Image (cartoon, rainbow, N blue to C red):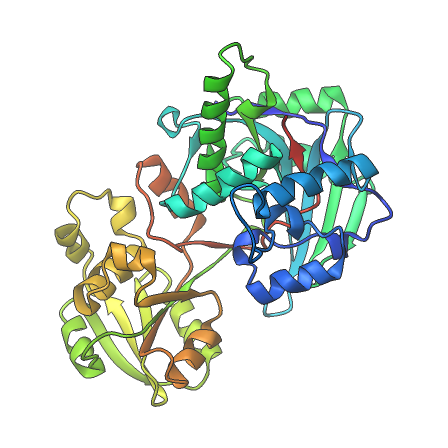
Length: 433
Protein backbone atom coordinates (compact mmCIF):
# COMPACT_ATOMS: atom_id res chain seq x y z
CA UNK A 1 0.00 0.00 0.00
CA UNK A 2 1.14 3.61 0.60
CA UNK A 3 4.89 4.23 0.66
CA UNK A 4 5.96 7.44 2.35
CA UNK A 5 9.44 8.96 2.37
CA UNK A 6 11.10 11.81 4.27
CA UNK A 7 12.65 14.47 2.08
CA UNK A 8 14.91 17.50 2.20
CA UNK A 9 12.24 20.15 1.96
CA UNK A 10 12.73 23.65 0.62
CA UNK A 11 11.75 26.42 3.02
CA UNK A 12 12.03 30.19 3.03
CA UNK A 13 14.98 31.51 5.03
CA UNK A 14 14.13 32.27 8.63
CA UNK A 15 14.25 36.08 8.40
CA UNK A 16 11.45 36.19 5.80
CA UNK A 17 7.95 36.74 7.21
CA UNK A 18 5.91 33.65 6.31
CA UNK A 19 2.72 35.70 6.49
CA UNK A 20 4.02 37.79 3.60
CA UNK A 21 5.59 35.06 1.44
CA UNK A 22 2.91 32.32 1.66
CA UNK A 23 -0.51 32.05 0.00
CA UNK A 24 -3.59 29.83 -0.13
CA UNK A 25 -3.68 27.26 -2.97
CA UNK A 26 -3.45 28.81 -6.44
CA UNK A 27 -6.90 27.63 -7.53
CA UNK A 28 -8.77 29.70 -4.93
CA UNK A 29 -6.88 32.95 -5.66
CA UNK A 30 -8.66 35.67 -7.65
CA UNK A 31 -6.79 38.01 -10.05
CA UNK A 32 -7.10 40.82 -7.50
CA UNK A 33 -5.68 38.60 -4.76
CA UNK A 34 -2.88 37.49 -7.08
CA UNK A 35 -1.87 41.12 -7.57
CA UNK A 36 -2.03 41.73 -3.82
CA UNK A 37 0.29 38.79 -3.13
CA UNK A 38 2.75 40.13 -5.71
CA UNK A 39 2.80 43.44 -3.83
CA UNK A 40 3.09 41.80 -0.41
CA UNK A 41 6.71 40.68 -0.87
CA UNK A 42 9.23 40.26 -3.71
CA UNK A 43 9.63 36.72 -2.37
CA UNK A 44 5.97 35.76 -2.25
CA UNK A 45 5.47 32.19 -3.47
CA UNK A 46 2.77 33.43 -5.87
CA UNK A 47 5.62 34.09 -8.34
CA UNK A 48 6.37 30.37 -8.38
CA UNK A 49 2.97 28.70 -8.05
CA UNK A 50 0.69 31.14 -9.89
CA UNK A 51 2.63 33.75 -11.84
CA UNK A 52 1.15 36.62 -13.81
CA UNK A 53 0.51 36.38 -17.54
CA UNK A 54 2.21 39.27 -19.38
CA UNK A 55 1.21 40.85 -22.68
CA UNK A 56 4.41 39.85 -24.52
CA UNK A 57 4.50 36.24 -23.29
CA UNK A 58 5.41 33.56 -25.83
CA UNK A 59 6.59 29.95 -25.90
CA UNK A 60 10.10 30.95 -24.84
CA UNK A 61 9.21 33.48 -22.14
CA UNK A 62 6.08 33.08 -20.04
CA UNK A 63 4.82 32.57 -16.51
CA UNK A 64 6.20 29.03 -16.42
CA UNK A 65 9.72 29.92 -17.55
CA UNK A 66 9.71 32.88 -15.14
CA UNK A 67 8.77 30.52 -12.31
CA UNK A 68 11.75 28.31 -13.14
CA UNK A 69 14.10 31.29 -13.34
CA UNK A 70 12.78 32.78 -10.11
CA UNK A 71 13.10 29.48 -8.26
CA UNK A 72 16.71 29.12 -9.38
CA UNK A 73 17.49 32.73 -8.40
CA UNK A 74 15.98 32.32 -4.94
CA UNK A 75 17.98 29.12 -4.40
CA UNK A 76 21.21 30.79 -5.47
CA UNK A 77 20.72 33.84 -3.27
CA UNK A 78 19.57 31.80 -0.27
CA UNK A 79 15.98 33.01 -0.07
CA UNK A 80 15.00 29.34 -0.26
CA UNK A 81 17.04 26.86 1.77
CA UNK A 82 17.04 23.08 1.55
CA UNK A 83 16.94 21.00 4.73
CA UNK A 84 20.17 19.29 5.71
CA UNK A 85 18.36 16.17 6.92
CA UNK A 86 15.66 14.03 5.35
CA UNK A 87 12.54 15.16 7.18
CA UNK A 88 8.87 14.46 7.73
CA UNK A 89 6.76 17.37 8.94
CA UNK A 90 3.88 17.52 11.39
CA UNK A 91 1.62 20.33 10.15
CA UNK A 92 -1.13 21.77 12.35
CA UNK A 93 -3.72 24.42 11.53
CA UNK A 94 -5.76 26.00 14.33
CA UNK A 95 -8.83 27.89 13.16
CA UNK A 96 -12.17 29.30 14.26
CA UNK A 97 -15.59 28.18 13.09
CA UNK A 98 -18.49 30.56 12.45
CA UNK A 99 -19.85 29.97 15.97
CA UNK A 100 -16.52 31.03 17.50
CA UNK A 101 -15.37 27.54 18.48
CA UNK A 102 -11.74 26.59 17.80
CA UNK A 103 -10.63 23.52 15.90
CA UNK A 104 -7.24 21.99 15.18
CA UNK A 105 -6.30 19.77 12.23
CA UNK A 106 -3.05 17.83 12.17
CA UNK A 107 -1.34 15.84 9.43
CA UNK A 108 1.98 14.67 8.05
CA UNK A 109 3.73 16.38 5.16
CA UNK A 110 5.67 13.70 3.33
CA UNK A 111 6.59 12.31 -0.04
CA UNK A 112 4.26 9.57 -1.26
CA UNK A 113 5.15 7.12 -3.99
CA UNK A 114 3.10 7.80 -7.12
CA UNK A 115 0.79 4.93 -8.04
CA UNK A 116 -1.69 4.54 -10.88
CA UNK A 117 -5.28 4.73 -9.67
CA UNK A 118 -5.85 1.17 -10.91
CA UNK A 119 -3.64 -0.11 -8.08
CA UNK A 120 -6.08 1.37 -5.54
CA UNK A 121 -3.32 2.68 -3.30
CA UNK A 122 -4.21 6.30 -4.01
CA UNK A 123 -7.87 6.84 -4.85
CA UNK A 124 -9.60 9.87 -6.43
CA UNK A 125 -13.16 11.05 -5.91
CA UNK A 126 -13.47 13.86 -8.48
CA UNK A 127 -13.21 14.24 -12.24
CA UNK A 128 -10.38 16.39 -13.60
CA UNK A 129 -10.18 18.90 -16.46
CA UNK A 130 -7.47 18.71 -19.13
CA UNK A 131 -6.84 22.48 -19.14
CA UNK A 132 -5.87 22.51 -15.46
CA UNK A 133 -3.58 19.50 -15.90
CA UNK A 134 -1.84 21.12 -18.88
CA UNK A 135 -1.23 24.22 -16.77
CA UNK A 136 0.29 22.25 -13.88
CA UNK A 137 2.37 20.09 -16.26
CA UNK A 138 3.88 23.21 -17.83
CA UNK A 139 4.82 24.52 -14.40
CA UNK A 140 6.31 21.22 -13.30
CA UNK A 141 8.33 21.00 -16.53
CA UNK A 142 10.13 24.30 -15.87
CA UNK A 143 10.61 23.95 -12.11
CA UNK A 144 10.82 20.23 -11.19
CA UNK A 145 9.20 21.21 -7.93
CA UNK A 146 6.05 20.64 -5.87
CA UNK A 147 5.15 24.02 -4.38
CA UNK A 148 2.03 22.82 -2.54
CA UNK A 149 0.89 19.59 -0.94
CA UNK A 150 -1.81 17.33 -2.30
CA UNK A 151 -4.29 16.89 0.56
CA UNK A 152 -5.13 13.22 1.19
CA UNK A 153 -6.96 11.22 3.85
CA UNK A 154 -6.33 7.84 5.46
CA UNK A 155 -8.09 5.53 7.93
CA UNK A 156 -6.19 5.04 11.20
CA UNK A 157 -8.45 2.57 12.99
CA UNK A 158 -5.68 1.39 15.34
CA UNK A 159 -4.71 5.01 16.16
CA UNK A 160 -1.00 4.27 15.69
CA UNK A 161 -0.36 7.34 13.57
CA UNK A 162 -2.54 9.77 15.53
CA UNK A 163 -0.92 8.64 18.79
CA UNK A 164 2.53 9.34 17.38
CA UNK A 165 1.48 12.75 16.10
CA UNK A 166 0.11 13.72 19.52
CA UNK A 167 3.46 12.82 21.10
CA UNK A 168 5.33 14.97 18.57
CA UNK A 169 2.92 17.88 19.11
CA UNK A 170 3.73 17.94 22.83
CA UNK A 171 7.13 19.41 21.95
CA UNK A 172 7.58 23.07 20.97
CA UNK A 173 6.97 23.56 17.25
CA UNK A 174 9.79 24.65 14.92
CA UNK A 175 7.75 27.18 12.95
CA UNK A 176 4.66 29.16 13.92
CA UNK A 177 2.85 32.06 12.29
CA UNK A 178 -0.67 33.33 11.66
CA UNK A 179 -2.10 33.79 8.17
CA UNK A 180 -3.87 37.02 7.17
CA UNK A 181 -7.12 35.03 7.50
CA UNK A 182 -6.34 34.35 11.19
CA UNK A 183 -5.37 30.68 10.86
CA UNK A 184 -2.58 29.60 13.22
CA UNK A 185 0.01 27.53 11.35
CA UNK A 186 2.50 25.28 13.13
CA UNK A 187 5.21 22.99 11.79
CA UNK A 188 7.32 20.37 13.56
CA UNK A 189 10.33 18.79 11.82
CA UNK A 190 10.60 15.04 12.32
CA UNK A 191 14.15 13.80 11.74
CA UNK A 192 14.49 10.96 14.26
CA UNK A 193 15.07 7.82 12.21
CA UNK A 194 13.15 5.61 14.65
CA UNK A 195 10.04 7.82 14.47
CA UNK A 196 10.23 8.04 10.68
CA UNK A 197 10.47 4.25 10.38
CA UNK A 198 7.53 3.82 12.73
CA UNK A 199 5.39 6.13 10.61
CA UNK A 200 6.51 4.49 7.37
CA UNK A 201 5.53 1.08 8.74
CA UNK A 202 2.16 2.43 9.90
CA UNK A 203 1.30 3.54 6.36
CA UNK A 204 2.27 0.27 4.66
CA UNK A 205 -1.30 -1.06 4.90
CA UNK A 206 -3.02 2.26 4.23
CA UNK A 207 -4.95 3.50 1.22
CA UNK A 208 -4.91 7.23 0.57
CA UNK A 209 -8.01 9.14 -0.53
CA UNK A 210 -7.34 12.40 -2.37
CA UNK A 211 -9.30 15.19 -0.72
CA UNK A 212 -7.90 18.17 -2.63
CA UNK A 213 -5.40 18.21 -5.49
CA UNK A 214 -6.65 15.74 -8.09
CA UNK A 215 -5.19 17.76 -10.98
CA UNK A 216 -1.79 17.99 -9.31
CA UNK A 217 -1.72 14.25 -8.60
CA UNK A 218 -2.59 13.27 -12.16
CA UNK A 219 -0.05 15.81 -13.42
CA UNK A 220 2.65 14.31 -11.20
CA UNK A 221 1.81 10.86 -12.61
CA UNK A 222 2.01 12.15 -16.18
CA UNK A 223 5.30 13.93 -15.50
CA UNK A 224 6.76 10.84 -13.86
CA UNK A 225 5.83 8.77 -16.90
CA UNK A 226 7.37 11.35 -19.24
CA UNK A 227 10.64 11.37 -17.28
CA UNK A 228 10.74 7.57 -17.25
CA UNK A 229 10.46 7.57 -21.03
CA UNK A 230 13.27 10.11 -21.29
CA UNK A 231 15.42 8.17 -18.80
CA UNK A 232 15.12 4.41 -19.46
CA UNK A 233 17.76 3.80 -16.77
CA UNK A 234 15.74 5.56 -14.08
CA UNK A 235 15.89 4.30 -10.51
CA UNK A 236 12.87 3.56 -8.36
CA UNK A 237 14.41 5.84 -5.74
CA UNK A 238 14.43 8.86 -8.09
CA UNK A 239 12.38 11.60 -6.45
CA UNK A 240 10.19 12.13 -9.51
CA UNK A 241 8.55 8.82 -8.57
CA UNK A 242 7.08 10.60 -5.54
CA UNK A 243 4.86 13.60 -4.88
CA UNK A 244 4.49 15.80 -1.80
CA UNK A 245 1.31 15.25 0.22
CA UNK A 246 -0.34 16.26 3.45
CA UNK A 247 -1.88 13.15 5.03
CA UNK A 248 -4.74 13.56 7.53
CA UNK A 249 -6.67 10.95 9.50
CA UNK A 250 -10.32 10.74 8.40
CA UNK A 251 -11.30 10.86 12.08
CA UNK A 252 -9.22 13.94 12.86
CA UNK A 253 -11.32 16.24 15.05
CA UNK A 254 -10.42 19.23 12.90
CA UNK A 255 -11.43 17.75 9.55
CA UNK A 256 -14.08 20.15 8.25
CA UNK A 257 -15.95 19.92 4.94
CA UNK A 258 -18.12 22.81 3.80
CA UNK A 259 -20.80 22.61 1.11
CA UNK A 260 -20.41 24.36 -2.23
CA UNK A 261 -23.65 26.04 -3.25
CA UNK A 262 -24.94 26.39 -6.81
CA UNK A 263 -26.04 29.59 -8.55
CA UNK A 264 -27.91 29.41 -11.88
CA UNK A 265 -28.08 32.01 -14.66
CA UNK A 266 -29.17 32.49 -18.28
CA UNK A 267 -31.79 29.72 -18.37
CA UNK A 268 -34.16 30.44 -21.26
CA UNK A 269 -37.83 30.84 -20.27
CA UNK A 270 -36.98 30.44 -16.58
CA UNK A 271 -40.18 29.91 -14.59
CA UNK A 272 -39.71 29.24 -10.87
CA UNK A 273 -43.31 28.11 -10.30
CA UNK A 274 -43.11 25.64 -13.16
CA UNK A 275 -39.82 24.28 -11.83
CA UNK A 276 -41.26 23.80 -8.32
CA UNK A 277 -44.30 22.03 -9.79
CA UNK A 278 -42.01 19.66 -11.66
CA UNK A 279 -39.84 19.05 -8.60
CA UNK A 280 -42.89 18.02 -6.57
CA UNK A 281 -42.86 14.70 -8.43
CA UNK A 282 -39.71 13.60 -6.60
CA UNK A 283 -39.50 16.02 -3.69
CA UNK A 284 -41.60 17.15 -0.78
CA UNK A 285 -42.02 20.87 -1.40
CA UNK A 286 -42.50 23.49 1.32
CA UNK A 287 -42.44 27.27 0.88
CA UNK A 288 -40.85 29.01 3.88
CA UNK A 289 -40.15 32.66 4.74
CA UNK A 290 -36.58 33.72 4.10
CA UNK A 291 -35.34 35.42 7.27
CA UNK A 292 -31.58 35.13 6.82
CA UNK A 293 -28.95 32.71 5.54
CA UNK A 294 -28.19 31.38 9.00
CA UNK A 295 -31.82 30.35 9.44
CA UNK A 296 -31.76 28.41 6.16
CA UNK A 297 -28.49 26.70 7.09
CA UNK A 298 -29.92 25.64 10.46
CA UNK A 299 -33.00 24.21 8.76
CA UNK A 300 -30.88 22.22 6.31
CA UNK A 301 -28.64 20.98 9.14
CA UNK A 302 -31.63 19.42 10.90
CA UNK A 303 -32.33 17.49 7.69
CA UNK A 304 -28.76 16.41 6.98
CA UNK A 305 -29.73 12.78 6.38
CA UNK A 306 -32.93 13.53 4.44
CA UNK A 307 -31.49 14.77 1.11
CA UNK A 308 -32.71 18.33 1.55
CA UNK A 309 -32.04 21.49 -0.47
CA UNK A 310 -33.05 25.14 -0.32
CA UNK A 311 -34.22 26.61 -3.65
CA UNK A 312 -34.06 30.42 -3.62
CA UNK A 313 -35.44 32.73 -6.30
CA UNK A 314 -35.81 35.91 -4.23
CA UNK A 315 -39.02 37.55 -2.99
CA UNK A 316 -38.19 36.80 0.68
CA UNK A 317 -39.21 33.15 0.52
CA UNK A 318 -37.43 29.94 -0.34
CA UNK A 319 -38.57 26.44 -1.22
CA UNK A 320 -37.41 23.59 0.98
CA UNK A 321 -36.99 20.40 -1.05
CA UNK A 322 -36.79 16.93 0.54
CA UNK A 323 -36.35 13.82 -1.60
CA UNK A 324 -39.33 11.49 -1.25
CA UNK A 325 -37.71 8.21 -2.22
CA UNK A 326 -34.14 7.20 -3.16
CA UNK A 327 -35.73 4.95 -5.77
CA UNK A 328 -35.85 8.01 -8.02
CA UNK A 329 -32.04 7.92 -8.18
CA UNK A 330 -31.99 4.17 -8.74
CA UNK A 331 -34.21 4.69 -11.78
CA UNK A 332 -32.30 7.72 -13.06
CA UNK A 333 -28.81 6.21 -12.59
CA UNK A 334 -29.13 2.41 -12.53
CA UNK A 335 -25.49 1.91 -13.57
CA UNK A 336 -24.06 4.04 -10.78
CA UNK A 337 -22.96 2.65 -7.44
CA UNK A 338 -25.24 3.21 -4.46
CA UNK A 339 -22.59 5.40 -2.81
CA UNK A 340 -22.81 7.81 -5.76
CA UNK A 341 -26.62 7.75 -5.98
CA UNK A 342 -26.91 8.63 -2.28
CA UNK A 343 -24.83 11.81 -2.50
CA UNK A 344 -26.70 15.07 -2.02
CA UNK A 345 -24.73 16.63 -4.89
CA UNK A 346 -25.58 13.71 -7.18
CA UNK A 347 -29.27 14.09 -6.36
CA UNK A 348 -29.09 17.85 -6.95
CA UNK A 349 -27.31 17.49 -10.28
CA UNK A 350 -29.39 14.57 -11.57
CA UNK A 351 -32.95 15.15 -10.36
CA UNK A 352 -32.92 18.96 -10.28
CA UNK A 353 -30.27 20.70 -12.39
CA UNK A 354 -30.23 18.25 -15.30
CA UNK A 355 -33.85 17.10 -15.29
CA UNK A 356 -35.61 20.42 -14.68
CA UNK A 357 -33.10 23.09 -15.74
CA UNK A 358 -31.33 21.32 -18.61
CA UNK A 359 -27.88 21.72 -17.03
CA UNK A 360 -26.07 18.53 -18.04
CA UNK A 361 -22.55 17.36 -17.16
CA UNK A 362 -20.88 19.21 -20.05
CA UNK A 363 -22.70 22.40 -19.10
CA UNK A 364 -21.56 21.98 -15.49
CA UNK A 365 -17.94 21.46 -16.52
CA UNK A 366 -17.98 24.58 -18.68
CA UNK A 367 -19.94 26.56 -16.07
CA UNK A 368 -22.20 27.83 -18.86
CA UNK A 369 -25.22 28.29 -16.60
CA UNK A 370 -23.78 27.24 -13.26
CA UNK A 371 -21.51 29.07 -10.83
CA UNK A 372 -20.25 27.77 -7.50
CA UNK A 373 -19.69 29.46 -4.16
CA UNK A 374 -18.84 28.33 -0.64
CA UNK A 375 -20.50 31.43 0.80
CA UNK A 376 -24.30 31.00 1.06
CA UNK A 377 -24.76 34.75 1.49
CA UNK A 378 -23.01 35.30 -1.85
CA UNK A 379 -25.50 32.91 -3.45
CA UNK A 380 -28.46 34.80 -1.98
CA UNK A 381 -26.99 38.20 -2.89
CA UNK A 382 -26.34 36.97 -6.42
CA UNK A 383 -30.02 36.21 -6.89
CA UNK A 384 -31.21 39.41 -5.20
CA UNK A 385 -28.94 41.49 -7.45
CA UNK A 386 -30.37 39.89 -10.59
CA UNK A 387 -27.05 38.38 -11.64
CA UNK A 388 -28.50 34.89 -11.10
CA UNK A 389 -31.99 33.50 -11.55
CA UNK A 390 -31.87 31.12 -8.62
CA UNK A 391 -29.60 29.43 -6.10
CA UNK A 392 -29.52 26.02 -4.46
CA UNK A 393 -28.11 25.69 -0.95
CA UNK A 394 -27.16 22.25 0.31
CA UNK A 395 -25.50 20.36 3.15
CA UNK A 396 -21.85 19.33 3.04
CA UNK A 397 -20.65 15.99 1.73
CA UNK A 398 -19.67 13.68 4.59
CA UNK A 399 -16.10 12.39 4.85
CA UNK A 400 -17.18 8.74 4.85
CA UNK A 401 -19.05 9.38 1.59
CA UNK A 402 -15.78 10.42 -0.03
CA UNK A 403 -14.23 7.12 1.01
CA UNK A 404 -17.22 5.06 -0.15
CA UNK A 405 -17.38 6.74 -3.56
CA UNK A 406 -13.62 6.35 -4.05
CA UNK A 407 -13.67 2.65 -3.15
CA UNK A 408 -16.56 2.12 -5.58
CA UNK A 409 -14.41 3.61 -8.36
CA UNK A 410 -16.91 6.41 -8.88
CA UNK A 411 -16.27 10.14 -9.37
CA UNK A 412 -18.35 12.80 -7.66
CA UNK A 413 -19.77 15.77 -9.55
CA UNK A 414 -17.49 18.80 -9.68
CA UNK A 415 -17.23 20.97 -6.57
CA UNK A 416 -18.65 18.29 -4.29
CA UNK A 417 -16.25 19.00 -1.42
CA UNK A 418 -14.60 22.05 0.12
CA UNK A 419 -12.15 21.18 2.87
CA UNK A 420 -11.48 24.01 5.29
CA UNK A 421 -9.03 25.50 5.91
CA UNK A 422 -7.02 25.17 2.72
CA UNK A 423 -3.38 24.16 3.08
CA UNK A 424 -0.92 27.04 2.95
CA UNK A 425 1.44 27.19 -0.03
CA UNK A 426 4.99 28.20 0.81
CA UNK A 427 5.59 26.41 4.11
CA UNK A 428 7.48 23.47 2.61
CA UNK A 429 8.30 22.69 -1.02
CA UNK A 430 9.77 19.63 -2.72
CA UNK A 431 12.49 20.04 -5.38
CA UNK A 432 12.63 16.60 -6.94
CA UNK A 433 15.28 17.17 -9.63
